Length: 304
Image 1 (cartoon, rainbow, N blue to C red):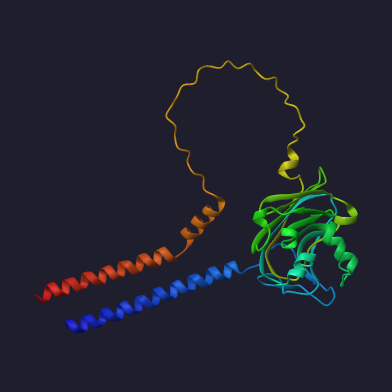
Image 2: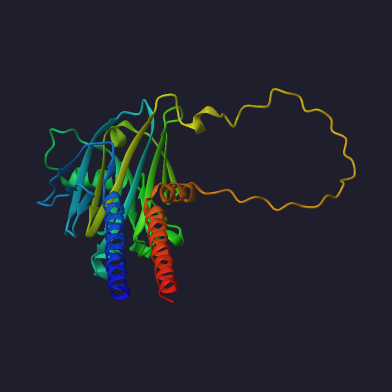
């Protein structure tokens, strides 16, 4: 009788272990599928240049290493009348291992505006150079210890953004009130340019060369009422007259430790972990194991 009970317990534990493993595996697969989705609210189309093409995939905008520039164009046309932001997340999968190519500035990635309309199915050297030097922000991570170009002006990249950085974000902010274009890399302001119809009016897009790249996020946001920065005029003088303040000797009070504020990413992680079924599965498995142990103890006690 005891032997039969022991066999039954082994089978139950085996089944529980299989269910637990399957749940863990399915949870991992779901998470992987979610991270592999391309986050965008625009339609994208590859534009041929010298026989090279970007690929528009389900997990992002992809290009392998090419020996010339490649373009991908969105369906968003900008003319300078509306404020907006354009946000990218970029993974650099590999770059050409050739010091001469890198030093010459042939390896680059450009996030730009002003791409020609949809009638243009193949771009020329004129368009390539226009975007490279004037149309947006161009990152040359290995040229002269890392530089960027905007409005035909070359400047050094911050040390933490040059060289072999493999993942980064790009944000373009356009304030129509001031006609200012601000370019950010990893939330660090690189350059402020001014909207020029000849250089910037056109479609939003990307140009790159000698780089294997995957763009996993490309999100455009309209601000018809203006960016928050446009609603505050730093030149306005205060309208209230300052009141006279009498100072008294400060009273010393025990200092309190400032409470830590949660970063948005931490909040997201906590929210996702609270929604995950994994804690419930672990709890259920633990409960079953406890019940099985109690049954074993009762059987042994009865046998005595």
